[in-house]
Image (cartoon, rainbow, N blue to C red; front, side, top):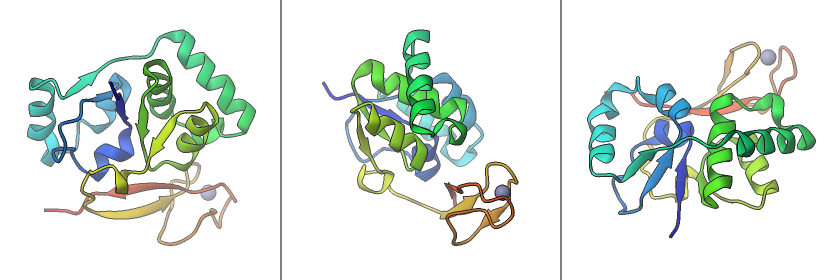
Length: 161
Ligand SMILES: [Zn+2]
């Protein structure tokens, strides 16, 4: 069985109604994405029909991912939510659905399959914003923060309805 693990960037992009896959996410990510109001009913329905399950990785898996991320230099670009999704993916030997650059890099280093949100069957709604994790400034089209030189992260800002 294929385990598909959704990280926050996947939820920001949309809800995977288009497929009959079973999805997993962690409670940290679930807390982060709960506020996306317009998706609220959809997420509830997925949970109710058991197509989405919230599960947390063991401490061992988490520390393994942390040490690997430190080795590859991605650790500072990862949130604890990112780490939890990679650790769960590692534990389930699943596929990680993410658009986060650092998370993809760490997952690939661990030999995990990474599926970009765009090709995952999740319909993307919204615009990508690049932001600096340190200054919290947004940039429309850049890879590096012009203020501090940090690598920018990317997230999908849902279009307002
Ligand atoms: Zn910056």
